[in-house]
Length: 481
Image 1 (cartoon, one colour):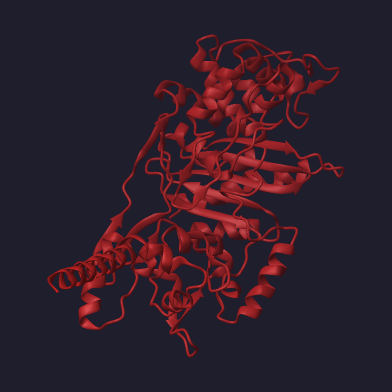
Image 2 (cartoon, helix red, strand yellow):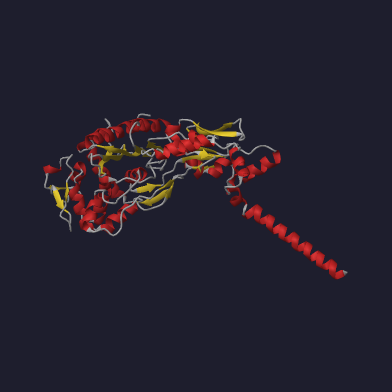
């Protein structure tokens, strides 16, 4: 009898132990996996029935949750959707979350570790938990100006504070309306997604940080110039061959000089003239002299190849490996397989503007809980030293000459020293279309903003009429505040 009781007691303890372990596993280890499981409809209803925090720009909500009269208590709503859609992303019942809605999903939903106490208080009080609000670093006037400059065209504009890394504007054109994808009507959401995905202009792609990336064209000559000065083999006084065509080693093809500038005026060029007129052959010669490892390392010093989150995930820019000499010559002028984001190009200029120190770009100013206490706050963070302060100052001076006396005169702002560099990337179009660039900063002696501007699929004349004059308007929008 005692043996039977003992066996029953042992079995009971074992069952209790198994249940306790299972409960512990479910509550503490498998909870998030189960909540995220696609068959967990209750989780979906909980998420879309929650009062999600707002995404704010200068105190105005660009994404917010409003009461809904359907099965979900709240509907996610986006204001100024074409202006901010690529930043906010969408929160969709059908397609999940993108943009900041995904990158800061835990904070916006109130599920972050920092909001644990808030969840406990809500549980005991019976109140519905409210997500944290997120304030962006974006300057609304500059964002609107950038969007207006890009209106009707494909391209991107990024503006940074060189000293802090704060992202002041980030626009990708064309835009899209995230409200279409956040609707609780699944049929209309699917139809909208199919239409947007079928659009050859790819409005869902944030061109500023992702997509197929761009050839940086002659904006990359800033990196060549840094590499030349750092090598000790070149100074601003060095005389560099400036033939109108440079034979590409191992091929029967030649690299021509840029036809839109004044490169034909000299057969020998110093760095100032070569950068002012954006002459191709001197920079190709520099790269061939220094070698691909030197140019690649300099590009990496400015962030090429490095992963980055702002907190939106940024596609790393690329300088190709194992180049032969002809490929290196083309890469030195930002062609061949060199690929970059507008954010990376803006970061390059920002590093030159900031005495060679590259700051981490950041899109989020503060994250606040529902009681307005600060959960997280933006603090400037150094990413790397891209070059020395002396080299940065020399390159800055050269970039000022590009605007004062070179091919970027359209970016000049009266009474202000502006540093800049243009670029024209050949994209292989039969119609002779290119991607046109401007990058730079102002004022050169006390930089407040660094820019990257790119317009897609334009001819040379149109590109010149868009890039530098657009940069001028953006500089003025910042400097006239």
